[in-house]
Length: 130
Image 1 (cartoon, rainbow, N blue to C red):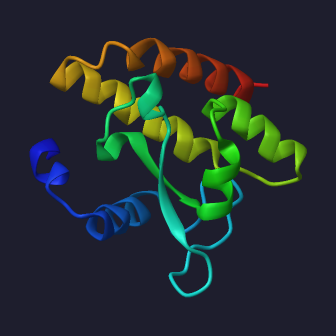
Image 2 (image 1 turned 135 degrees about the vertical axis):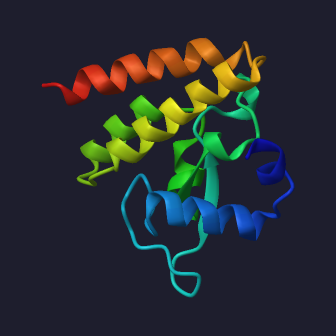
């Protein structure tokens, strides 16, 4: 799966992400429609923090949310989205982080991103239990 997925172009990757997670922004849940809301691929673990450019590290986000998130972690950005009255899709984010964690096991490497993912999973799954 991984080698083949890396060869996909941006449009093909987005199509797979939308099929996997649903056609909405993971943060604000606006419907993603190529004519109304421009979709972007959002790296859950930013590349600057060691996040790999693999489909397991990507979710769909509208351009507004992708740009406004900046360097906030997924958990920090979910908190901010909720403060704004949005209903971010926590389940999709947690699912993506779990797939990324599994990719680490299967592929090895990505040492810089591992603690980031573990911390985010702890925070997001702890918060969802209450």
